[in-house]
Image (cartoon, rainbow, N blue to C red; front, top):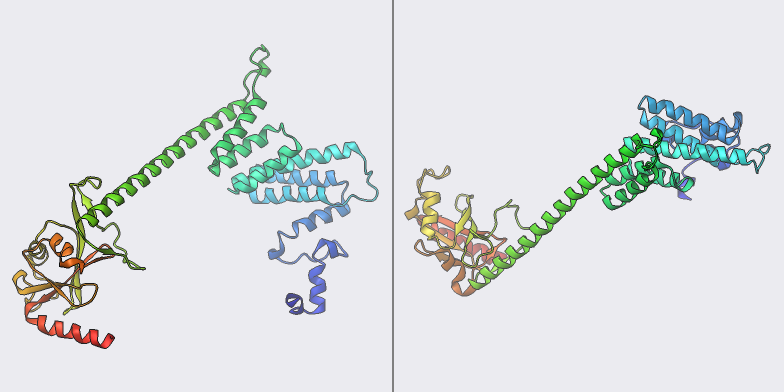
Amino acid sequence: MDSVRSYSTDEVVRMMRKTPLFMTNLEEDSGGDEDNEENIQLEALRALQYEGTRAEVALGFKERGNEMVAEKRWKDAKEFYTKGILALRAPLKKEAPPDNEVEKAQERRVEEACYINRALCNLELRNFRSALHDTSHTLLLTPTNSKAHYRSALALLSLARYDEALDSCTRGLALTAPNLESTNIAERPSPEHAAFLALRTRILDAKRTADAATQKRLSEDERRKKEQLSLNAAIHARGIRVRMTPRPPDLEDATIRLLPDPLSPTSVLNFPVLLLYPTHGQSDFVKQVAETELWGDVLGMVLGGDPLPFDRDGEFGVEGVESFMEPREGGMVKVGRKVRLLDVLGGEEGKLEVVDMVVRVFVVPRARVKAWVEEMKARKVRKS
C-alpha cells in the first residue's frame, strides 16, 4: 500500500488504465519507452479491435516479423512475433464462432510459426535459454517440426548441454532421413538432413573438447592434491611450523615448494623469503631460497652487489648486519650467517613459524641493533 499512497488518485487511475484488465479505451496513452515491453500486449489488443480474427491479426504480426528478419533486425522481428503470440491469447470476439475448426487450425499454424521464428531471433540475439523456451513451445504444437529440433540443438550447444543437443539433433536426423531405397531424386538426402549431419559433427567436436578439458582439469586437481600432501608431509617431517592468517598477502605464484619434483620425498624445500629493514622502512623479496642454503649466502645474494638504493651510509654490507626472526611468543631469535635455513626454521624447539608461506627475517645494521631491540621491547610494553 505504501507504493499506492505515494501517488495521487488521478495518477493511480492513469497507471491502472495502462493495464489491459482495467483499460476503458484501447487508445489510452501507453507511456514512454520505459513501458515499451509491457505495451507490446496493448498493441496486439488494439490491432484486434480494428482488424479481423485473432489468426488474421497474428498473421499480420508474423509477416511484419518476417520482413524484419529479412533485414536482420532481430530485436524488432522478435517483438512482432511476440505480438503475434499475444494476439492469439486475446479473448475471442463475440461474433467469432467458438468452434470454428478452420480458424483453430489457422491459429495453431500461425502460433507455431511465431514461436519457431522467434527462436531464430533469440539465437541471433544470443538469448539461448529463451530460444530453447520457444522451440519447446513449437514442439508441443508440432513434435515433427524439424526446424524446432535444429534450433533447439543449436541453443543447447551454445549452453554447453551437449548430450541434450545430441538428442535433439538425433531426432531431427530421424525426421529428415531420406528413403535410401527410393530412386526418386526428391527423396535423396536433403539440404536439411545435411545441415543436421553438420550440426551433429559440431556438437560431437565440442563435446570431445569439453570432455578433454574436464579430464585435464580433474587430472591437474588430483596432481595438486598429491603435491600438497607431499609438501605437508615434508614440512611436518622437518619440524617446521606453518600458520596461515585470515588475509594472507597476494604473492602470485610464490609459495613453499618441493623442487625439482613436487612428488619426490628426496626433493628440497624452497621458501619465499621477505627481508625486512625496519630501521629504514624498506624490504626485499626473494622468491625461492632452498632449505640447504646458508643464511650468509642468502644475504650475499641480496646485499653483496650494488648498494641498496636507500643505504646512503653504507650500513648494509653482509658483514655489517645482524638478522633476526620473531617467535610466535614474541622476542627475537638471532639468525647466524653460517646456519642453514632448515636449521633455523626447524630448530629453536619449534618457537619459529612460517606465516602465510613466507619466511620473514629482520635485517638490521649492527650499529643500530641495540637501539632497535630496545624500541621493539618498548613497543611490546605499550601494546600490553
